[in-house]
Image (cartoon, rainbow, N blue to C red; front, side):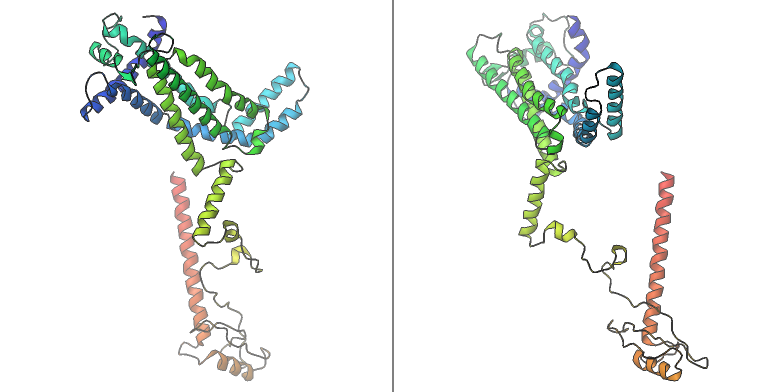
Length: 407
């Protein structure tokens, strides 16, 4: 066992535990024990487990890329500011200001690589586990087992095949034409899925303004370079590693498709497509466009004073007093207590005595035992309900404030 295997051994044991666990689960569910599809699917299960574990990093990757979109306008201004300045002091100052921008927006250019970087140790550990199946199955491995992967399990896994190609064989090392064909097809699929997953993330979910800068051009270049790197290096990968990487790329494509479709970046191609879907859905339901629904009617009433789902209540005004200390009469038009229609306004001057009071009383209805007309009684009820609503709102606000302090 060389130094590389010694460093990776804890990760190799974790990989072996997952593979053996998935294999035993599939056998328990009814699949054939021994060499066969159960060991091929154990690699698929390993991929699914790893991808579930790094889901938080995936969302961090999406958040970081959106942060990079927000920082691009300021980054371009910074580049123009230091354009032509090549002295060490200016370059250092530019780097410091760039890092400050990244901290301000909570992002960094390496966050989008986190899922791949975290999978690399798993990738190499799986590579070494598959490479060790042959020596372990015949007792030539320095250890008796790799975690739960015993000599018996190793013999079963080493002889398991995908379309006739053993999962431990590689394109270059095997003289079998079946292995070469299967490996070549897997390499093409792996490279294609990697390319489309990168294109989906960098092209469809980024606004045009964020694509026209040096960093975006570098990302587009990497989008083409990485698949070629994996295509040329794939001839050294065992079939099992090619299965892992292909399934991982497919998982990435599906995860990105769901996230970008539901929560696209504003201004991106995916965002425009989502807006079109929403518009067509509203049209099928007979609803107006979203822009018209959100537009407030220009009726001269301020937004804060518009009623929401409640009929307009009469506004209380000062009532003129009758001469000689008589009961005050309302001099303004108020809403009817029965049907809410405006009552006729009393005419005349507040100081015109009994004639004005009589006209107001006649228009507003008879005076009750409480000394109020129906319109005045309705206004009183409205004022009481308004006071209750204000008190309830103040109580809710105080409770929310107390809860915030406790947290």
